[in-house]
Length: 408
Image (cartoon, rainbow, N blue to C red; front, side):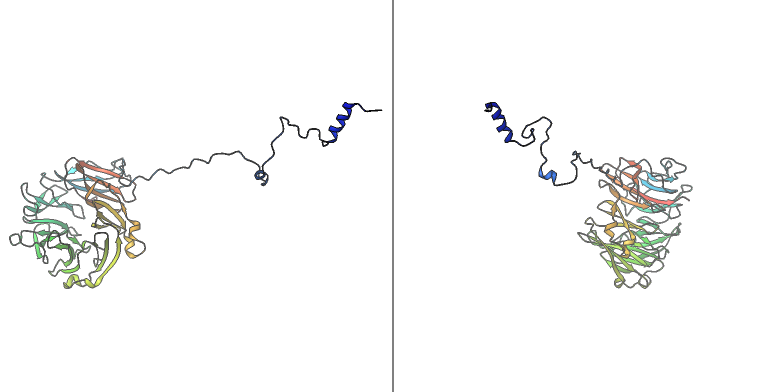
């Protein structure tokens, strides 16, 4: 019996396919095959998530940023000098919250009773170099004292005397006399709280830098120069004698250590400043030069020079001025424990010109007077860089002085 042509065609088609009748047929539920890269790993595929946004810490504010108060200020008294006299303000955070400062009071009987203010370490007497209203700084000024207790003022040196410096015990004042021998070369004089008692010539100079007492009150260190353009030569001297000893030429800014035998000073070139330590044992009393006893303790990359070195009361830090700014570094570096430059920090605004500064009795703060673009001000900055408070500001440009003492 012959097969039907349609049945024969169906048999031929079935013989050319596999046993799976769906092979080669596209269906909506079919998934595309995985790529080789996907099948090469055993980890399951994950959905892509964007990386978290990084947390950027807010920048640390500079130490000269103004804050409302510094609540850990020590109980003490801040003295400062304005164009109309000398002022004092008590510091006590327990009594004068939140600012910690009492209202300032004037110590000057008249506005002219001011100039180169310096306060005894006991905080009971203020020495000034008062200038006559129409006089010049050096020829018409005289050293006077102001009593912090009752405001009395009296003169202890004649005209032509400037740069008062208190002895550590508060019984003597060293100063420079420019009218000796009719205005010749200056001499250094000592006075008690009443009158001068001893003067001696400064070696071959026409000018003198600040006079610096040793902690035991037995010696003075000072810088002399022959002209304004010349570098200073550093000398020391026994206050009871008249034999100055040259410590180092071209050096300035002496600072005594606690032993009254070791002297720190600076020597600057165009690009850097070096700190030297000198042992003055013997040369201060014999008048012999101390050249052989110098040790370079540190180098600092300060192209703006270095001045006004000051050791903190706890001997842990040294403050200085450079390019008009107040800076500080650790005194430990002078012993070679670390690089002094690694511990150096500037504490004042670069737009200010610092004129004077003084450590707090607990060594944690520095008060300073500075010139503004149009005026001047008195400030306190924390050494730990936690901020600055403003004590006083004026629209008048002047040279503000400042001293910080324990409360009497």
